[in-house]
Amino acid sequence: MASVGSGSGTVYVNGERQGTAVFASISAKKLSDCNTLDLFFATLVLRGGDTVSVQGASSEGASIPYSVTGGTGAYAGASGTVVESEAPGGTNREFRVNVTVTFL
Image (cartoon, rainbow, N blue to C red; front, side, top):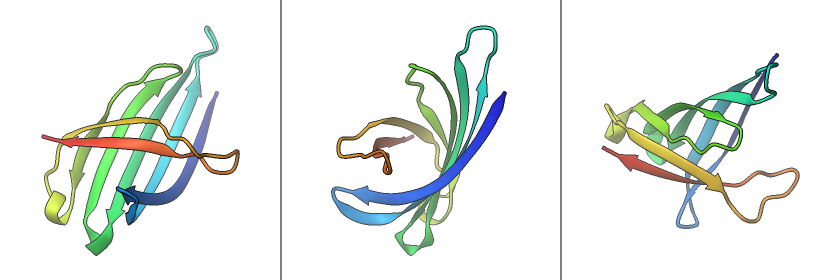
C-alpha cells in the first residue's frame, strides 16, 4: 500500500522569512511488519530565486539525514546533508519542522 502527499511552507532563518519550501512524499507500508517507509523530495525556493533541492528516505521512528542534491544560483552544484526535527508551536493544522542544512 502506498500514499502520496505534497505541500508547501514558509522557510524562516532566525525568524526572518527567506522563501518557500515545496515538497512531496511517497509513503509505502510494508504489510509484513507494518512499518512505513517514506521517500521525500523538496525544493527550497529562496528570496532572489535561488533554489536548493533535497531528497531522502526515512522509516518510522528513525532519523535519517536527507541529501542536498543540487541547486541554482548561489547554490548551483550544492551538496550536503539535511537533518530535521519537530519544532514547537505546531497545531493539528500546522506542522513545524526545524531543518539544519550542512553544505559540503
